[in-house]
Amino acid sequence: VGDQVGLHPHYAMTVFRRCYGVTLIQYLQRLRLAHAQVLLLTTERTVLDVAFESGFGSLPRFYATFKSVCGLA
Image (cartoon, rainbow, N blue to C red; front, side):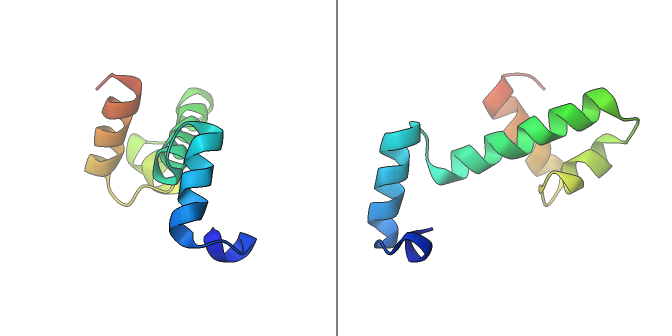
């Protein structure tokens, strides 16, 4: 991100967090979860397929992120 906007990476992350209130990693996790939630509600795909299509590298990582962000298992 920093390279794309011509800022030092640490400063770019600081600016991002100030603007959005979350780190870039947290933002990406929420974006991936939002996509996963849409797929879970609108398709018949398995949770595993949804997790991978949403950018999660494994089903345990998807469950852990879902639980930490949404508060549900």
